[in-house]
Amino acid sequence: MTKKPHIVIFNPDQWRGDVMGHLEDPAAVTPNLDKMVEEDGVSFSNAFCQNPVCTPSRCSFMSGWYPHVRGHRTIYHMMQPDEPVLLRTLKQNGYYVWWGGKNDLIPADADFNEYCNEMYEPELKPKKESNLHFADSWRGEPGDRNYFSFYGGKLDPLPGDETFYDKDWADVYGAIDRIKNAPDDQPLCIYLPLLYPHPPYAVEEPWYSMIDRSKIPKRVQHPKNWEGKPSMLKGIHERQNMHSWTEDEWTELKATYYGMCARVDHQFGMVMDALKEAGIYDDTAVFFFSDHGDYTGDYSIVEKNQNTFEDPITNVPLIVKPPKSFSVTPGINENLVELIDVPATIEEMVGITPKHTHFGKSLVPMLDNDKISQRDAVFCEGGRLQGETHCMEANAVSHAAKPGLYWPRVSLQAEEGPEHTKAVMCRTMEFKYVRRLYEKDELYDLRNDPNEVTNRIDDPALADVLMTLKERVMNFYMETSDVVPHELDKRF
Image 1 (cartoon, rainbow, N blue to C red):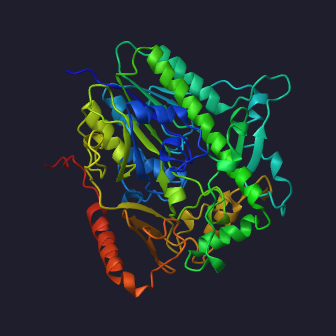
Image 2: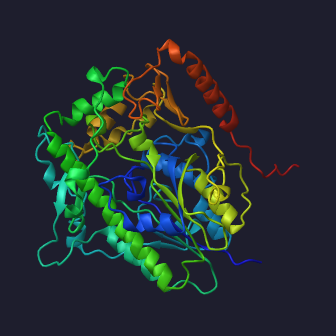
Image 3: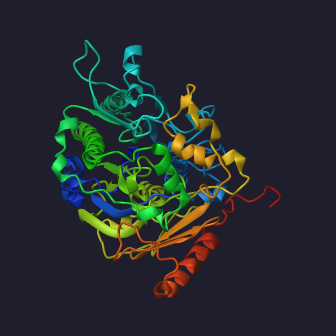
């Protein structure tokens, strides 16, 4: 039997899909990712997540199921023991699965031994923990123009320390150590779900100063009076209270985010160097992708949202380097793909036949042929029904007796207005349609309006397009509405 390849799943949090040098973003500093795409990997520039926040997206790309299949629409409803998870499948098929980083996938009381051989927990001194980038001393007081901005700026080492250090650094060094000391009798799977570049927007030197502010792309302006946009975005804009920010300040926020991405790229390069030093780089399948993106000032808001679907938060990076035994033509592939295609690709590369129905399509045929298109549309979904109080995430509204960072969004989720309406996105190469239950649908002509500013849902010139996309959404739900277990009942 052919030896199974090692696997690295490098999974940064909240990295928008356009912040990479090889995609011609002039401000991006991503030399390690760019080098992989030039030499032995494929960058899928039109990769999309299936939900624009952390937990639902992770549940989707680890199972190959869309969020609606089992109701994974909130951060409080994670994978259950009877649901398929790629990490557990790999472990059951002989892989030594090392997991270092955030969870946001399975409940805290779950048996992690079911999913991995090693759940890495680095030792951090208490003073180090106090210097994690989630510390919010930079916020000021409620009502300040910076209070909900997520902007922290430059991070400095604590007194007596030479460099800044946090859990991401600890997990990266832990992964490198495991690569250097990989088991002799098992293929290795490294799962590295980092926190960066998830806001707060804060990073240390040299990455803070590495970004040329003059090259930062101009942010997308929201339409006047938010005409045609969902009420959730207008509500977040009003409650984040960043109306008085200058363009220079918005640029600085975005540059800091780019610096966070540059740091992650450097860490990615460290892990790739470790594979090469261990002599297993050629025998390793590498997957680099994020769970969702980030607004970073586009539409005059920051962070993300659970039921809106603009490209900045739904288009994500996805780079695949196969083991050397697979054919690859390095470069950029512009065909539509989804994150649920990741487990299907890994299964093909390692020779696993899944024991459950899922909806991913292996990307292996596309790695050496960019003419192959496997999807005519991609989908993303979120929100809730009115009355689904268990989906409000209401206990995230406040934090330590003060409004938490997520208050502008979560406070709207906890109300019974139309803002948190259940919605689904259907995106083709030319159009994006969003079906909403309690307010106006959206339709964008991406050929002439790539920034999705002008909602043309009522434009009779696009009536045929709208009808086609509505039909496509119907087919999507019919094709993916349920999964029948592969194992028959015992009476048969």
